[in-house]
Length: 338
Image (cartoon, rainbow, N blue to C red; front, side, top):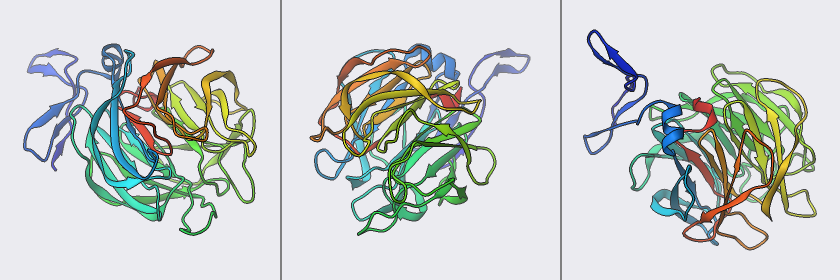
């Protein structure tokens, strides 16, 4: 695939229209033009994608929704592989990326063009095969962090790796988390990535780390969640990051925490999800944060949403095409693209 980046139309100059987005030529030899700026896409809805994971067994199903409206998800297409244990999802305004997951730990990375529907195509490979990985991005780089790399065991890893979303190829080493952990959650602003919680060695943690996405290097401590948990998922509006769901070792949780991404410090209580659930899939359009599916312990098909800039409990959005958990989500208008 050849990708040409130009600017989306934002005005008329002396030589014609001025652009500030993406123009992508796909494998079918036609192009997809992203529809306006991120703000424009938020106002018109933005599209959220959910790779369902265990549904209830290993699945390659991808669903999609229009984030600004409410309603049931529709079928998008299929991943290049079936997964049942926590892949990572990230995206630009044009491409959605899914990588890692189980069973038997995957190093596969695949991609879709978010504005269209259809099956995923091969992108490249992670530096190591792993599941329980989390991912986030800005408009240029996708970041995959943490996970477990031993197929028969549960030892966590501290690896952080990155890809350039517009270019096909294998991931490259970025640095390391402050400690090894599997099943953390993450989110981002255009500048900073935040990785929270997870199952370390030997227990669940409340640790929050951050990185600067444009550079490489090890993560730095940010603060702490309101409690220990793994199997949580993040969303953001570019300013505020939220982390919902999880398991504290005794119970599945409906907890939502929030923090200000540009500062450091401990998270605060945001509100509650409509149900207690572990490892749902998440997507946002910089206004709404969506949580889809999850397990409690059976897989559920519920999609719910919050308004990220305020605090309060989640509301019902609609349903997935089938119950699913331990997958991943992404969108064309999340807070990392603001």
